[in-house]
Length: 383
Ligand SMILES: Cc1ncc(COP(=O)(O)O)c(C=O)c1O
Image (cartoon, rainbow, N blue to C red; front, top):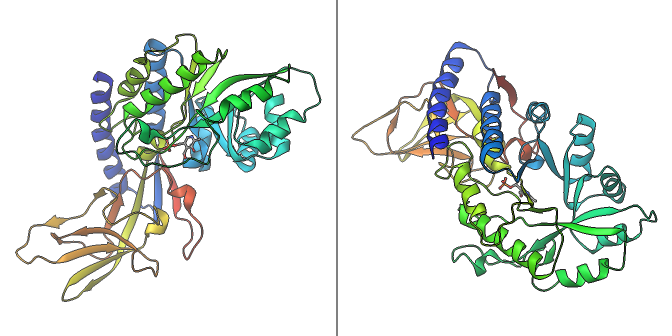
């Protein structure tokens, strides 16, 4: 918890620094502001905590969450392992010089699948198609492989969504068959089990359950594993109600815990969400009988098209208490009625050209920009 409160303090200072920078510089809007030092500090803190306390944890970053060039360059400089889920992500990561790669997901190509195995990267098999690629390899060289598995979290966590996952092989029903089949290939060794699922509450409990179930299976079936890869789904690792230590303690508290086994984590959101802000400016104000609309030069399309109003914290709002209660919306540039970013009953004393900053929006925002209606926002790295 100590580490965690230190980070919260840093984050307050960081917010003030960002505000100062915005007031002193002329950033062209709309733009993403990449708080590079937040990412570097978070990574350094995590690396330090792993080294001193949780030394069988292996950190990797989930590429898809945000693959802006500056983000990837920063991660590569910090020598972080990258988790990729497609031929495109694999090829870019290799070209950029990432030394450690984890190759997941159904969008591999046969060529990059084989290339990854030849380079001794971690490859987690997703389906029968990839099993057939594996079996078609003629070389008798030893091949190490991981297998993605699934099981419903809802069996263990009451409010987790009940879903029959389409990813990997069911841990309780299908995996044994796959392992039996692969036993016929003397040069192939299953050295890892991989699991990832989305759980909206992002609790440490989820990671304890996943670790426990994978380790139980491994023990029961006498697997000789090098790693279990328990995926992503962490809350912000520098300023949420759960600290990095909370997650690690949960994982380490498993009954079956094996100190010799590597445990891979693949945070995306947990690492990058708090490293971005999104700056816009007000370009029109429309006052009507029932609501006021403050049009900014940004849009939900630059954040998350599916997000609801008030999904993001906002700075520079200039809210004032007022007797007249009326809905005040900050709305976006697209022609979708739902392009409403912020709603308040308080009076907004915003004027044309005033800036509005949407905070902590690095995950699944920039990487989802589709080009629909609007151009991609500008990008600045804050030093
Ligand atoms: C296999 C895998 N690993 C890691 C992640 C990252 O998840 P998050 O951004 O929730 O940490 C995802 C996201 O979908 C994923 O599919």
